[in-house]
Length: 165
Image (cartoon, rainbow, N blue to C red; front, side):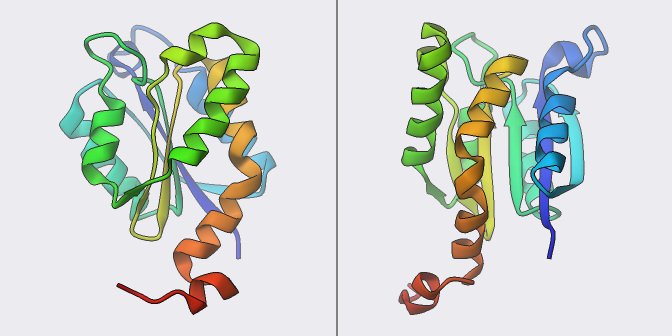
């Protein structure tokens, strides 16, 4: 069974057509090259409620939802807050891996507030809006995504043995 993914670009300027999205298409290529089927794409403005509802919509159509943009510290960067509002559990370790890899590239990676969490049986991952930062971050964790999705779906021995609460 092919893994499904969604790519959500969070950017006022891309949403308004003032700037072309380069991160979203780059992430889509990387995911396709990693055997994911892209089943959902959308560009939304930096508005918390729109981001949250789009993440929910994407998770209904894809097991792996990535967002790009809105993870910094400017006033309109609200992607982490929107993500936290819809996720069931947070995966701080995944974020730590991304941040560590990002810091190997630039000290500005320390300013990213991106999150990773679960939404039902989907995995939601916030990536930076910068195309290089988004690609570096995604590449750093791609090797664990399939296993995480298997765990969420109860498809591993560990998941089957875990008590449901």
